[in-house]
Image (cartoon, rainbow, N blue to C red; front, side, top):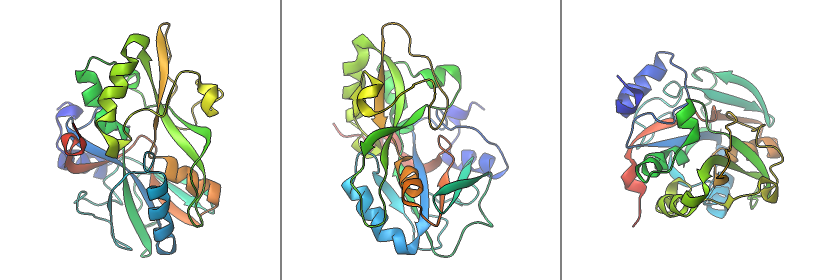
Amino acid sequence: MDVADLSPAQARERFRRGERAPTSGWCSGWTQANLIAVPERLRDDLRLFARRNPQACPVLDAGEPGAWTTRLFPGDLRTDLPGYRLYRDGAPVADLGDVVSAWRSDLVPFLIGCSFTFERALLAAGVPVRHLELGVNVPMYRTGLPCRPAGALSGPLVVSMRPVPEHQVATAVEVTGRYPMVHGAPVHAGDPAAIGVADLSRPDFGDAVEVREGEVPVFWACGVTPQAAVMASGVEYAIGHLPGHMAILDARDDDYRVD
């Protein structure tokens, strides 16, 4: 079965059994989300960080301390994503296929909106999505733009980039602007240096893709931003998804569309 035709439950089962892949293009029509789980003492700080930086950190769902399931994610957050990243004292120390043994009773999971959710709408509008064409992960970059800090958390805005033909940039802005809970309209289009991105060929996360003649690099706020805050703030322990390897929710893309 084509991965686009899978249900969220079918995808989660495949990941639980060990399949590892970026999830752009999986489960067409279903919402994807970033995972960040932090110690309970940082729960309020992360909620405030999200409220202060809503375009980068739109919270779709959250769990209680120690919980590994939520209302929108009825699977197991410890096993049902295709990849995880473990942090200690702000440093990424391991990329893992599951985090059963690493999940602590004080961890509070947050599910943050993901721009993969609006890619089907881009394609329907005729806007190409390069990383899907190439079968690679979306490129993501730390910017020079600081997020508004909250309590113990601070760090840079992270963005994802998609090359868009110049004549379709306005369409891309209009289409994605209808999805404010999954990052919405771009934060920047054009010169990467204007947002502190020095080299498009060297993303901080994901895979580089070519920006061809007649195309403009377009940047959307990215749900990896909380992981950048974990790193910048030296958080003693946290678990995130492996960038590009998302949680697939029991919610429809159109649940987050506004007209």
